[in-house]
Every structure is written in structure tokens, then in C-alpha cells.
Image 1: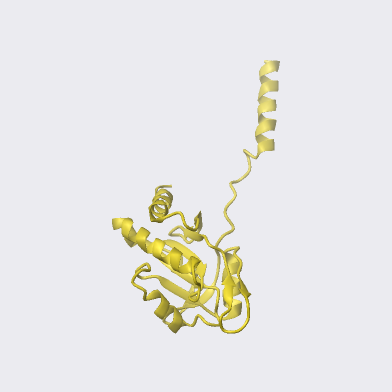
Image 2: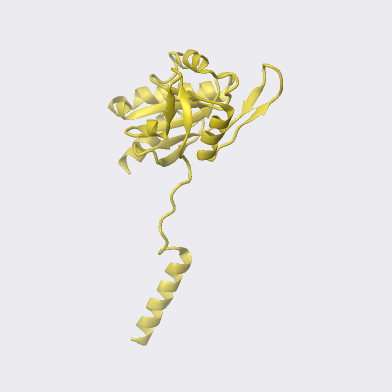
Length: 187
């Protein structure tokens, strides 16, 4: 009996040390934001409620990552089939100086991009607050009108409650995007 008690105590100590008794950690990605959509209407984080949301931070003058991501997401949208009705795409601009609601409307009207994408922008302070909520970064690179924006390449998949589900890495291809979204939907 003494041996069993000591073994149980040691097992408990190991479990405690490895964190087995701690509450699960929740991701710190996502949170409150106040922006405007491409129609100029105020939008907050409640836009994420009710659907799976693929949230991407980019800008309309981006020469490579943003259009590549948007095309990949459109292809994934097509391949999702009936599940596509449960997924929305959000494009949050990190370039509020140039990305007005009208500019977002023009950019997102590209037939190669996901249908129904919600474009969001705001004041520099509002965009900074949204980026902070998603623990993401961006910065202006260069001067003049042809500057670029340094920004993250992955997208964030948020569940229908608006909580973080997973990161969708850049360049994984539309089939893998579908696999990632479908797997999250099953969890």
C-alpha cells in the first residue's frame, strides 16, 4: 500500500509539474475593433458572429502577397462547396492612408477574389487597435506615393463565436485551406 501511495503521489507531482491540472490556455488572437466597411458603415467584432471568418490583414496596393492570398481564398471558397455559405472573408487594410472605403470596393470587386469579401479600414488609430487585437504588425516602408507596407502573411480563422480557431499560413494552396477550414469546423 505504501508503494502504491508513493507511486500515486509521484504521478500527481509529475502531472502537476507538466501542467495537467491547469486550465487550458485560450489564444490571445482577436478581440474588439471599430472599423468601417467598404460601404463606409461602422463595423465591430460582432461581424464575426454566426459564421466562420477568414481574417486577413493586407492592403490594396500590395504587389504580391495580398492578391495571391485573395486568389487562393477564392479558389478555396469554390472548393468548399456547400460549406462556403458558412464562411466569410474579411480583408482588413493596414494602409488607412490610401485604402478608403471606395478603394476597398474597387479592389474587392476583382472577380478572382472571394465573393462577398468584407473590406475594412478606418483611421490610423482604429487600424492600429484592430492589429493589436490580432497580435499582428505592420509598418510603412518607403516614402512618397509608392510606399509599401510590411505586414503579416497568414490569415486567421475565427469560429462562429468570433474566437480564434487557427492560423492559415500563406501559400499553402486552396486544397489545404479547405482542409484547414473543414478540420476546424469538425472540432
